[in-house]
Amino acid sequence: MSTYDVAVIGSGPGGYVAAIRCAQLGMKTAIIEKYDTLGGTCLNVGCIPSKALLDSSHHYYDAVKHFEEHGIEIPGDVKVNLEKMIARKQSVVDTNTAGIKYLMDKNKIDVFHGLGSFKDATHITIAKADGKSETIEAKNSIIATGSKPSTLPFIEIDKKRIITSTEALSLTEIPKHLVIIGGGVIGLELGQVYRRLGAEVSVIEYMDRIIPTMDASLSKELQKVLKKQGMKFYTSHKVTAVKTTAKKVIITADDKKGNPVEFEGDYCLVSVGRRPYTDGLGLENAGVKLSETGQVEVNDHLQTNVANIYAIGDVVRGAMLAHKAEEEGVFVAETLAGQKPHIDYNLIPGVVYTWPEVAAVGKTEEELKDAGVSYKSGQFAMRALGRSRASGDIDGFVKILADASTDEVLGVHMCGARVADLIAEAVTAMEFRASAEDIARMSHAHPTYAEAVKEAALAATDNRPLHS
Ligand code: FAD
Ligand code: NAD
Image (cartoon, helix red, strand yellow):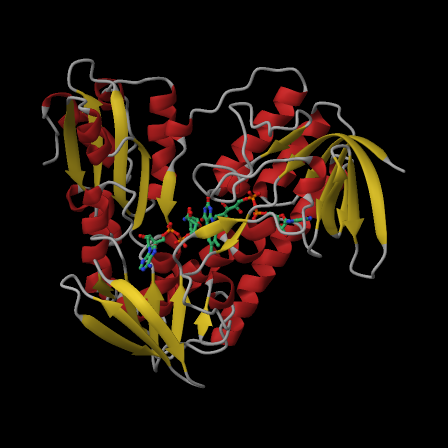
């Protein structure tokens, strides 16, 4: 029987990063993945394929809507070849997942394909696709088994008409009317993909605003822009039933006043969140406890109730984000090596990759108000930037919230072109506990979208933006 210092179960961004860091720190490491390809949800059916389709559909939308104003004329109609678009997405996925295999080999990590299941706290049995199984011994284990789409109790996902993000990434036709339940990240990103490709898109959201966990100003701005692009929104609507026929889906919801409303579409995307995934993991054999919500319970060191078993990523509490899972993978590896790592969960940024993009880090205005913190706010509109006018990306703003007395930056909220990348500046500043004035006094290259960060910081410092 092979023996390892660490066995990682699950090869998503949490698991594969944990394995690499363990190997870097000199531990003999194994990784177990039930599917044929490595990379987990993120690389196979999450972050990467959704961004590939967002980028492809963005090119198409620009060609149809914006090329002409730039003086580019295309003789004849611009057409979508969905099959080719989906095939390209798959080749992007394949390149990325092959890259993880390369990294495993480079770091001398043993890869096992098959369902990993605890036999006891130090032994894991791997059930392979060919019916054979193998057991390995592991002094320590890291559970990184991720999550699966969740649904509502009365909805049966048939994967044909009533679909999750996984099916929405590989459709064979552009929906005529895509009805989306849930105006969160998945609903908006994939909704925008199919809207750009020509589908009618209706988003039904239970809360009174889309992306309800983000700063309310971002919900308002993004909804305004997406509405202009033709997406329809039904907030404060409670879905009560979803029925399907061969070619149609009928969704019934109660509106704000409790009156029933019916939506008829050819596809219904259910994007109401994801649930931690521990099926078949044999946690009971190792004595690992789950919380009431099905998450693997961990302490501040990401250690379960069984001392040599740790858990990271979507399967534990906190934001279900790839970069959060990665940080936790590094954290556990360094803990196992006797180091004292640290994660500031307040500084894990959140991004929505629509266009305009949305990105945020730190506290929202709503959170600061609830906590009774006195703060000041500085905001700068993207449309006032030379760079935005040059590219035509004039929607959105950057908002900086700073402590009223110390000027320390407490939250940064952005909507606009490339803000998914701009948010890194805010994270860096906040990691170093910068004041708004610190950012305001830094040189930002001209002309860039990043100038909006400087201007918002000037506005937050003492209301002296230079360009508005
Ligand atoms: P996962 O990536 O879910 O990986 C878990 C792996 O464990 C899987 O490969 C699974 O097969 C394997 N596994 C499970 N049980 C076993 C077992 N018993 N034995 C062996 N293997 C097992 N996050 C972002 O930060 N940015 C984005 O842009 C983004 N876009 C997304 C888009 C979509 C459509 C979706 C669905 C998600 C997106 N996410 C995004 C979320 C991101 O994918 C997850 O937060 C991330 O993948 C979590 O990583 P993980 O390592 O915890 O788990
Ligand atoms: P989400 O939590 O982002 O959004 C779910 C939405 O559904 C919420 O707005 C919620 O209020 C709404 N909702 C819940 N029950 C409802 C009901 N009965 N009727 C109508 N609306 C209802 O979840 P998601 O969009 O499914 O994404 C799942 C996870 O994947 C998220 O945690 C997210 O972090 C991750 N993800 C991240 C990215 C990214 O980082 N860009 C992209 C996609 C997914």
